[in-house]
Image 1 (spheres, rainbow, N blue to C red):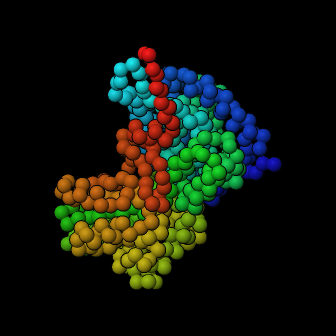
Image 2: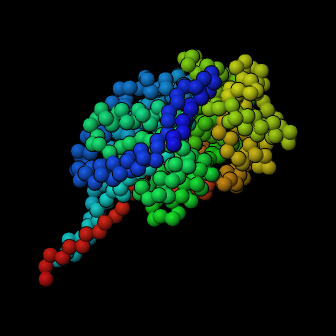
Image 3: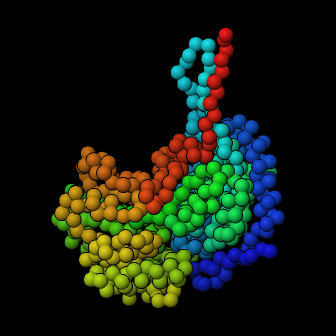
Amino acid sequence: MTDTIRCVSPVDGSVYVTRATASAAEVTEAVAAARRGQAEWSRVPVAERVAVLSRAVDAFVAAGPDEALEITWQMGRPISQSPGEVGGFEERARHMLAIAGSALAAVEVEPVEGFNRFIRREPLGTVFVMAPWNYPYLTSVNAVIPALAAGNSVILKHSAQTPLCAERYTAAFEAAGLPEGVFRHLHLTHTDALGMISGGGVDFVSFTGSVSGGHAVQQAAAARFIGTGLELGGKDPAYVRGDADLDQAVANLADGVYFNSGQSCCGIERIYVHRDLFDSFVDGLVVAARSYRLGDPTDPATNLGPMVRTSAAEFVRGQISEAVSAGARALVDPELFPSAAEGTPYLAPQVLIDVDHSMRVMTEESFGPVVGVMAVDSDEEAVALMNDSEFGLTASVWTTDVDAAVALGDRIETGTWFMNRCDYLDPALAWTGVKNSGRGCSLSTLGYEQLTRPKSFHLRSGW
């Protein structure tokens, strides 16, 4: 028996896509095909694998305008911004392919007379990628392309909100001539996806999603000796020091808060500002928030679209209301945004002050266009507040003092530490989190390590 998934567009509430989920027989066949395909694919030289995958990237980028429009309709990001995800996909994919040869090369060890010793990086087998809706290509490319480059096969499950993204991968790989079985997408229920993990059909799981989802994935994998890469929640902080360039900090942090309606894994959700700059910073941030155009994301003039669904917007409205009831002040009047309305996914941007860590909006992931701002008197206070979180994906400092930025970064519990930047992934750097933000590493040369296993060769040539 199969189920049906429905993508309800946040643009207008219409059903944009329906798809039947894979049957048990289809799942079994896909797993078996992946196993067969991987055995052949792993014997293809790395340079040849890279050439095939590069053609797939070419095909994907060529379809960029259609892919961007589909993103807008599936999850609501403004069409003025959706093409950027196609560009980001290309940047990450091409970087990981460019470094594949060196990253996957055998590791030589110090010579010993009479012996030849080295370590090869072998593929794991079949990698199961479970991707979310908020950045459907940017989250999945981190695993899909390097996993294939390393000689694995890949089965991709996308969110029910963005099923067309999985199908775009298939089209690109077919156009590039990727061998049969090496890549397959499946539309699956959560239960069936967890069954694939526990049932022995896959050898590694790359999951991006909620903390609760990460626990479910880890539990499903617990009975088997397979690895998991988990990118989970975030409550990413920023610290504006007293020596910061105020205009730069305001402009970039506003973008970090409100881009993609705040639905970014590494979006800014809390800001700590040195008291000397606090009033000026807040004034600037409020002006920036009020300047957004909330509305129909298919309109090129819109730069703030709906949240993915009404329930998500209601969750954030609840955080805001609860904080205000506890003494916080909301500085942006929702009436300035005619499109914002209760009972819809359209939510006005918001800035909260007089907040503290007893409020959920400062400790619980919001994943929406709201930020709390607190004044601090020292670096010590900022560090303590930034680390006062169950999450640790990214964090940033805004300062003109590089030495201070490095010293502070050494003390912050985070996977990535930024100075005068936020909400960005550099594919040359490791993408990782600490605490409830997950485990494992993607991107950079280190990202290939979790997608391969070491195999030692110890060859004696003389007696």
